[in-house]
Length: 373
Image (tube, rainbow, N blue to C red):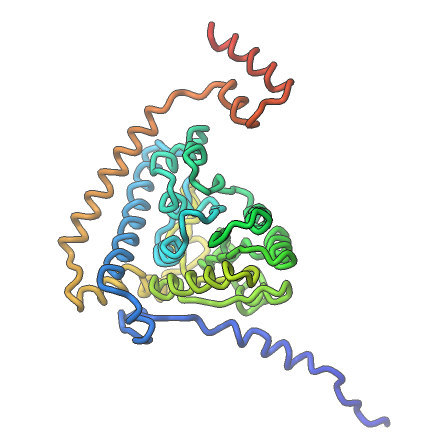
């Protein structure tokens, strides 16, 4: 019998180690509100810490009030953000107004932070064309994308445009969830941006579930951050329930990209506390309380609240007043959204092209004539 031949390549070893560089999430404060990296924590002033807490309280209040509106039948589609405040507000705080945002449907808080109004966010949920007035005001943001992963391709194209136009200190950035990384558009987008070394930051908010499909059955990759490596895109994991770590990593990624190094990929480890959407999926049918509890224990607001309270920078009375103030603002925004004019066919046609084609121009005249009767 011939001697057993030596392995030419140890594929088993490669498979067991290829995720090692990507599965060490950056963290500043842990789930108990304990500072685990003092050097990174010391980069924040007291005012910055309070600002970041205020932004998370704002997003939590936005979620609560918007869900109330949804239950009242006053909105269309809404994707809850409960639990993802640190991930979303940490990233939003690191980006600049000259950057181009390509949001997905769960990214209304980031869109509003970037320059859209709450009213416009509500109009988007209602499917109203005036939702996009922020574009006319010069806000550099696309409309929230419903198609899973499509924003990765769109954002990569914008990043190439930034490079070709010679814009300095400007990036395109976009978001998808863990399920979005299984879409073809995800790979096409990161590969395109990498091929052209375009200034793009790709964010993956790994909230554990693609509607009812758990992260572990979506892909065999141990981390989502490592999915960039085949395209030459460096990736990193960050504790997405830690707003300080998320902000610092997002800022570092942006700095890397604007320096001309090509795109970067950031995976934030976060969790969707509630349903996938207001459309009615029931999380209790596909996950248990035992599965959820460790994540609720990592609530990003509780975590930073403890740090600020210990430093005597925060108290419950201050938070309660902020929540009341924010919710009043959201109620006013809903009243404004509900006062928007009813849409006409001609309105849709006028907003199809910047300069209507001859056929569309003819249709506009036709429908305006009908609508004037």
